[in-house]
Image 1 (cartoon, rainbow, N blue to C red):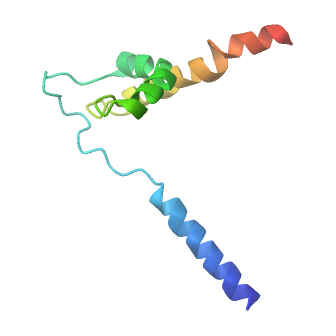
Image 2: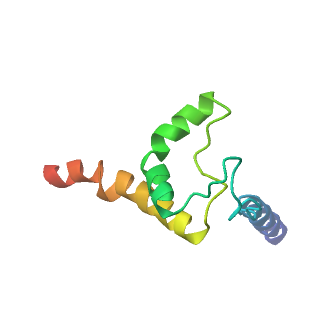
Length: 100
């Protein structure tokens, strides 16, 4: 009986994790209504402002954290780099380094 419970729990965890997996972005590498595609620099900027954008997106349906009309890997790299600079190595991370 214990093995069945563990198997059911494991199956539920796998299904739950599969539901969190990202899907394909069908708008990647396609221009928006103004004919623009976000690249590395736009991704870097969006990553830097992502904490503020997240809070605004909770109250405004027209604001999104991530630009779906992007150039692909370069935008993703810029976004992760920008978010990392804000959260760890940049703006907030420098305060913790001085305290030590």
